[in-house]
Image 1 (tube, one colour):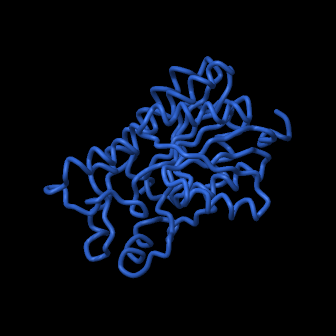
Image 2 (image 1 turned 90 degrees about the vertical axis):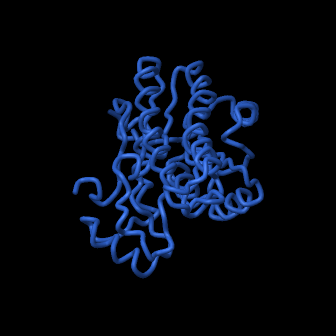
Image 3 (image 1 turned 180 degrees about the vertical axis):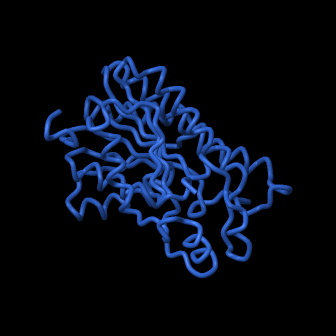
Length: 265
């Protein structure tokens, strides 16, 4: 294999959830190896701000609008990317409801969790990933090559540890966990369907990402993770580049877990 198997020069990448916590990190990772990145988000103003910061740092990034729950919005995004770049090589389905970006009743208990919030979370986290794979993946099939990375979660692999949340102001609702389990299943389904056609589909599961967490939650988390700490955002970059590049040319339907050992215990 070539010494340049991480090389992403001139490859075109779409990253959804462009205004969120991790999208800029994914963009830095890909741009650092030569890719051109389009950050897409429902909140175009916030996405524009994230892109401006990256551009000031010298990265080749642009901003686009996308409502990941709407197929026509996906098709418009793809058409715009193809008009400018003629192709799309990488898709990172990164958009999702999280503790940083909550649905209206994200913190409600299981017994009282509203159907409206269940549907909202499932629509973004799972249906949005399905639509991204379907719309952008169809173009990749035409090209005969592409890499799709679906962002899953620890709680798409194991249940949340319910004991770490009381008294912390942080919660993990049922719809989040179920939707992320669905993302892993969707990844395996599409990966095995398209592997022989040159389109690789994999998932990446981040561990708990440090975002100024404090107090009781942080102490409990540290004690429960073999590495003794939460993950820094930058620690996902290597996994993103690996799955996006030819370095992972024989990796299909895999869920790359970067969690400090959480799911090994």
